[in-house]
Length: 192
Image (cartoon, rainbow, N blue to C red; front, side, top):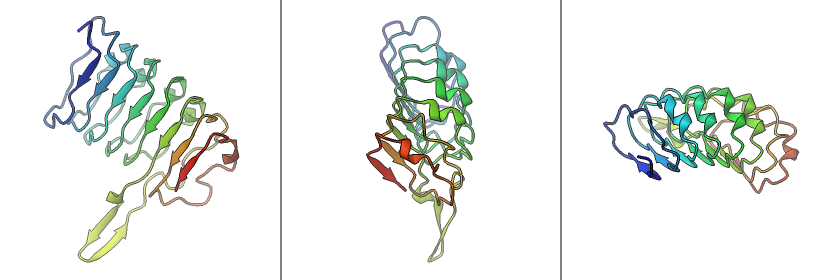
């Protein structure tokens, strides 16, 4: 697999485990595991030094993401949209200097890592809830608040490259958005 650049196992809905990455897989730049039944990512993913995109969207069984992903220094896109069982994210997220796009929408996260504010190259951050937070009981609809409703991030000072911030359907409450939001000097789009 030395020359492998792109690996997609997307929509392999019965795939519950992916093997360890062994050998020299330095050219793999896109790994797409979207809509699989995986519960965890092998720690060897941290050895994928050329990885630019990691797609985990729709992995509804995914319980955690190993902190070794922060070793992927080339990673620009990390998509975890719809990982509905993902309740905690690794604190070392903030050392991922190249990360430009992070989608944590429709997850079970109760809080974001405080190191998030150190992502100086982050251009797009999505932590939106989902229309799935509306449950139908007969003809009535009832809103179930998203778990991040009162805690998005404590400060925005380090997020100077952020252009898009998506906070839709979070049922935001007082103090959820930091008072220093004015430091987001590159912000072009704010959805709440």
